[in-house]
Length: 224
Ligand SMILES: Nc1ncnc2c1ncn2[C@@H]1O[C@H](COP(=O)(O)OP(=O)(O)OP(=O)(O)O)[C@@H](O)[C@H]1O
View 1 (cartoon, protein in one colour):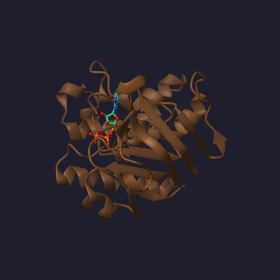
View 2 (cartoon, protein in one colour):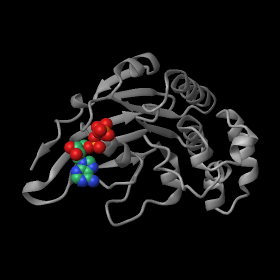
View 3 (cartoon, protein in one colour):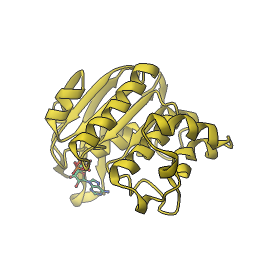
């Protein structure tokens, strides 16, 4: 289970500080498909980053499979960070423009000193990336193709939980459906929990077993 317990997250200090999340609690079970909806600025990306252990909250804690994540100042161990993978809204911001898609997909294996080739061979076809596309750089592929590479990279970590932050928002309807179908298939095979954060309630309702508006978990962002 991936748990956020009473998370409060602020940006800045003093009178200009923004409270992006206030006392948010959430549970994501393995195999669950949970949709979290909210308008722009409601704190979705902040929550996504807290859950993916990229931001330490000011108050509260994240618990991954029963293991509380260390507070700010102490890096969470790599195995814990790999358990929760984040699929970003913008694949271009999440990839090195100099890396080929093959390197993007193989990155998690390379980082731990494993041979990336078998990992790429396994995951690229699953997300619909051909060998020819794998040889291209981000500027030589479409957003949808690059997001497929980012999805393969996330899945190559064999995460227990996938947090998708507006991950299909920039894609056309058919590419969006294809990507969600890949996630659904991998979820069926591996039982990972998926949190879909989106402003699009129709997509969330169509795809998720349960949909919760973020303002039911938190107060709206406020000054101070
Ligand atoms: N680095 C930052 N510094 C200061 N304020 C920030 C920062 N990042 C986000 N915020 C503020 O925190 C609040 C929540 O932002 P967040 O990006 O989490 O919302 P969101 O729901 O993901 O929005 P969007 O859908 O537009 O990405 C907003 O008021 C935003 O302006």
